[in-house]
Image (cartoon, rainbow, N blue to C red; front, side):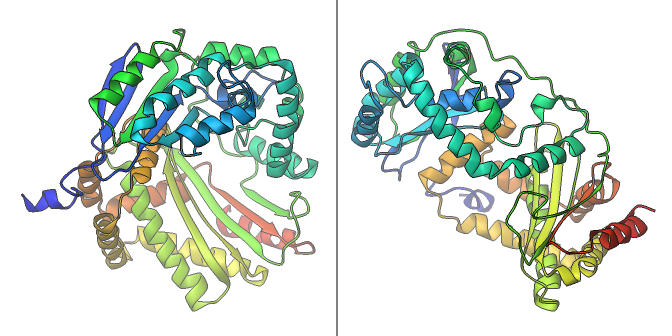
Length: 450
């Protein structure tokens, strides 16, 4: 075996080398994993919260809940719970995101057909009756308040979204697939039925199965997929292709103004976004940029100055944008000094400093990939993430190839774009009550927005 092959093979295989096929309009991704003890199944529909009608935000998530309320074979929630315990290792679950709804579980190999049969029943014959809708509405409303906390919190979130996405339609400025408490209250049974019948169709479906699978399992899957109705693909939601400069690029609030419990710490964050460039290794550039900035910030803000417990650096790539954020919960007395250190680190990277640290982080990243103990669950999570955000599953071989190709100049390009040139760059700061916000506002304006 060639040396470069040994880097990405695990027990002789690339566990992310999925087979893709199409059956009755459904994309099926499958991977047999020799060391797996069960089978992981994901029914991923290309419809989510962004497909909710205006004023009824939360319908798709509501529909997801209703899948578990009863079917002809499993007429009550209790019966569906028993189905989950008998055939899916009590793992049956679902989630709704902005763009997807997913029914998911794992099962033993010999329970595969019963698990598929029950899942398809939920996706095609759920009762969706009035009584269940009213009961579930109460549960979902409480779920929403668990996220939003109070009306002041909602008011702050909406003002923040409007500041950043001022050119977006109101209905696209949502912060959760739950919708808002007031829009959940307006959802009726007919809204859920319409979403169920319109979007849970084969044309919107991708199935991902991996683990202890055989040709027999794929044959069974195809037999049951024919029971899912055919229809129209979910309409593509119009989203503006550009984000204009926020009205306020300095965003300072007390925790009380944000509808949050007061804190003795301050939060400081610097974020920005740029149009995504067509690099094959966007994901890996973001990962190494995050690793490098995290290490430098941690050394500066925690080890050298003892102003905080930890720091955060995050980078990601959507269909259209690359974005990044640097943040920390910190002693309020050192907000200005910490911001100056962050900006100095950014400047030094652009000057060519930290190349030694970059090479160290790159080597560590590769070594960690080699050392990773990959489970079937890890493979499933990575596959679903790849389909959701990149419409493909990256092979382990390609991930190693891409990380090797990342150069320090790629890091500089991303840092400069997100934290220097970006028109969406924002300083977001949360402070305790009584903190002099005006002083920090003046400091940031004089230092970074002259």
